[in-house]
Image 1 (cartoon, rainbow, N blue to C red):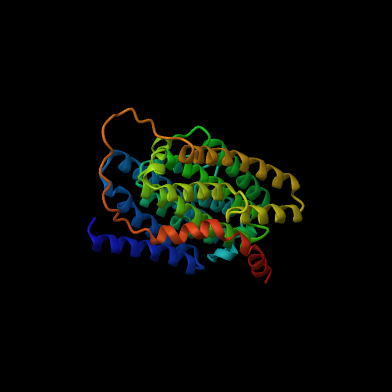
Image 2: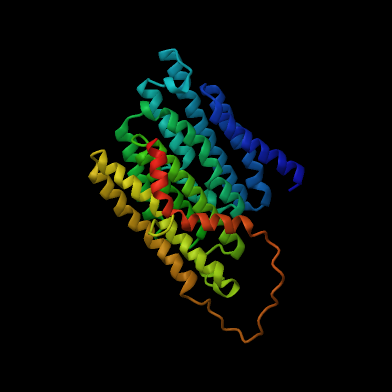
Amino acid sequence: MNPYVLTILLSSLGLGTVLTFASSHWLLAWMGLEINTLAIIPIMAQQHHPRAIEATTKYFLTQATAAAMILFASTTNAWLMGEWEIHQLSHPLATTTVMLALALKLGLAPVHFWLPEVLQGLELTTGLILSTWQKLAPFALMIQTTPTINSSLLVAIGLLSTLVGGWGGLNQTQLRKILAYSSIAHLGWMVLILQFAPSLTLLSLSLYIIMTSSAFLTLKTNNALTINTLATSWTKSPTLAALAALVLLSLGGLPPLSGFMPKWLILQELTKQGLPLSATLAAMTALLSLYFYLRLCYALTLTIYPNTLTATAPWRLNFTMITLPLSIITILALGLLPLTPAVTAMLAL
């Protein structure tokens, strides 16, 4: 893609998200979401591959549907209650419709079906943008509208998303689909705690973005798209393969890695709020996700790619990819757990 065109598209992507962040009026927020969607579509379709075009079409249709639902809900609220402000969303029909629309935009269960299919058709860099940056604007709106949304609906969507995210990834062999189900599960944890501690949701979102970025960049560096090709990573770069296994365990939420921090604090907060059953169910569904992360770790570090050829080893060319972002993000994805006391002190302020 032409660098100038790419710069304009990425700038529009940033503009749409910032516009949604800064808006207190539903029309401005809707406009930001639309700019965001229209900016990423050419980036998604730049491969000119049938699967990329199919993924782009599916993404456009789901996002357009969600945006239409948001516009309908905000107009309904303005008609019935006389308010266009995001904080003044008060009619039950409008609040439920907005919640479902934002769930569709984020890929939360039960309206998650588009996310694995779309992510599977994209290259890893575009998939990274879709899994991280594109979640920010809908989450900003969800945090602002949480006080008016039915708490039972939020808990139900959160628990269902953690269950679907763990269950759906069990039988997958494509790494992009596994990361899509991982995304659904992590977003479920964030929605589960949203009404009780929004600051914990922001902490979880930040750590999710760090860990997912590290996972995507590692896969891009190793040029791995399936579990089978992961087995070649050890011969290419043993250090990166070992770190990638730790990043996957961090995504699974194992101590002493960074991913344990949000799960620990969320379970603690749910117990404080008198929801031990929800906390237990969430912890049980985390075990499902942990299974397929361990499966990836096994393929990455404990298996050798089947090699029946007697030919000599291929040439190893000089590595030209920039690895500084990957290095920084991987360190953050692995070593932030000791900062938990400082984080809890900041959240308490």
